[in-house]
Structure formats: structure tokens, C-alpha cells
Image 1 (cartoon, one colour):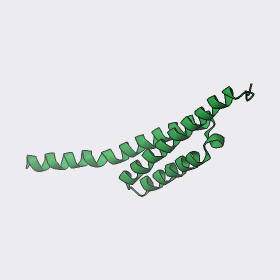
Image 2 (spheres, one colour; image 1 turned 120 degrees about the vertical axis):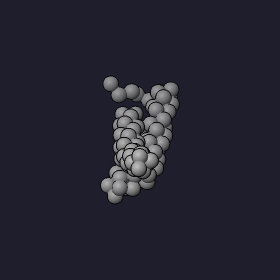
Image 3 (cartoon, helix red, strand yellow; image 1 turned 30 degrees about the horizontal axis):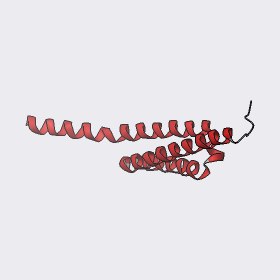
Image 4 (spheres, one colour; image 1 turned 60 degrees about the vertical axis):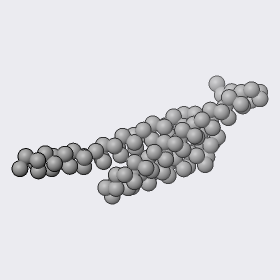
Length: 105
């Protein structure tokens, strides 16, 4: 009887990991998107910026349907695109400085 109780408890712990992991990945994607916004990705990397926001929206939707693994997958894609957008925006900003563009005060 104790083996069954232990197995049931272990299954309960594993079930709780889905919401925690998906929430963690969604929060990470939100942070990456905010960093991209700060770098100016809306103007400098519109494709990556849009993709990151749409993947984040889809991640939230899937978690709402209790499909936590899909939520994690979409949140990871959102983070990746947000990071690419930030890098592209930062690269454009540094290359713009060397071309004599005036900087904003």
C-alpha cells in the first residue's frame, strides 16, 4: 500500500510542474520582450518584434487551455525572437552611431 501512495504522490508532484515551468518561461519571455522594447526593436527589428509578441500571446492562450507543454514551447520561441530583435536593434544602434547619425538626447 505504501508503494501506491508514494507513486500517487510522485505523480501529483509531476503534475504540478507544468504550470510552474510554463509560468516561468512566460515571465522570461516578457522580460526579453521588454529588453527588446528598450533597445528599440519595434522600429529596428519589426519582424522579430512581432513574432515575439505573437508567440507570447499564443503561449498564454495554450496555458489557458491547460496545454502547458505547448505554452512552454511558444514561450521559448517568444524569448528567442525577442532576443534576436534586441540584438538586431542594438546592432543597428551601434552601426548608426558610426555612420554619423545624430543621437537622441
